[in-house]
Amino acid sequence: MSDSIIQIPQLARYCNEALILSMIDRGISHGYQLALEIEEHSHGFFKFNHGTLYPILHKLELDGLVTGNWHDEGPKRRRKYYELTDKGRDYLKNILREWQYFYEQFFAITEDHGK
Amino acid sequence: MNRFSEVLIRINRQLDLPQTAKSRVLLEIAADLNDLYQLYHERGDDETTAHRKALEKAGVGDDCLRDLERIHRTGFSRWLGRFSRFRISFWERYLLFALAAFMLLLIPPELDRFQLVRVAGEYFWIQAGILLAVLFLIIYKTWELYLKQDHIIIRLRIGLILLPFLAGISLLLTVGGAIGELMVALEKSIIGLDTSPRSWLFLYHWLFKHSYAGSFSLLVPLVALLGWFGLFSKIATIERAGAIHLLAE
Image (cartoon, rainbow over all chains, first blue to last red; front, side, top):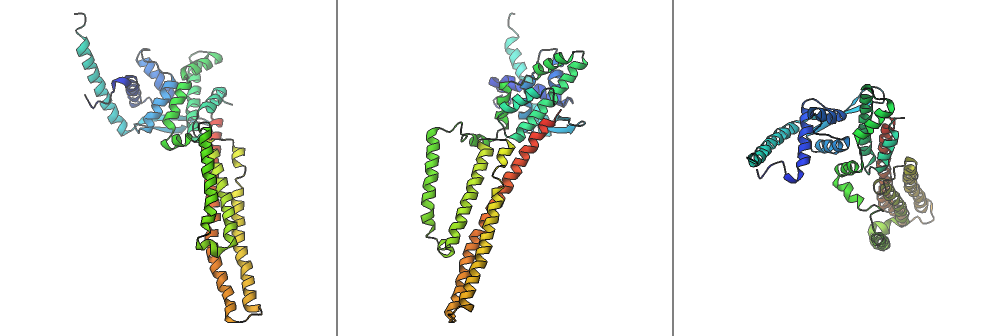
């Protein structure tokens, strides 16, 4: 796919985006939860530090794929919650489709290895 | 004080962003650190262990801060950053200074060719001097805010009060000068020894001179007050943003 969203040199970035957007789509909306839930759902395979998470979340927010809303939760306590926008939902749909295609092509080449 | 104040203060120092964006980032990090601490504490870790685990999981290192700076800096602020005193070379500074000096030496003689200057007379030069002082102060404060990024509020506020003060001086001069010269013109035309129609020319001359002087003079307090309002609002925003992240628990 010549006009694919996923560019091979930036596989890690698109992988992280897909994981994070999927989690937000499931209703996991708070920053610290995202990293923990991804690690738990993948049985430790995908591990995020918040240091990796913040730049991705903020980039997604700047690109209009998610919105970040501040909620007051008691005195001197504010939390930021993320939600997918319509643009973000479309982007997630497309990027997951392309990841599907990526793996199909990958295994089309590698599945006969060793036979 | 937040239990993670030390870390937040370090990040605040290292993160090279305008204070408003920086405060939002710090608030988010502070909230997540506290949530992680609560989580580990509820899972049975003692305070010290929960604190350490929260910091490890947060993992906000230099790479993260550089990425955040890259994301949050707009194209304009990135371009402005090129002129920071830490990036501009000695020769570039020398050239900018020479250019400014050349402009300042060139402009006044050229201005004298304009009718406004000739008719307004000495009032033009006084108001031009005040305007120059106003512009210098605005440019200096803007440099402090956006290029030097000195966000120590007390230092930023120093000298800001001069702007409305200079606006007041300019208005006083405009009005006072006009009234003063009107008195002189009236004295010459009505009360003076010369009662010929030509004496009324004094009044006409006053009107002509002060309509020119007034139109330029009103520009000076306008620029001063607009500059003061813009800078004051920006400093107030920084102050508020700074207070928010310090108050976050």
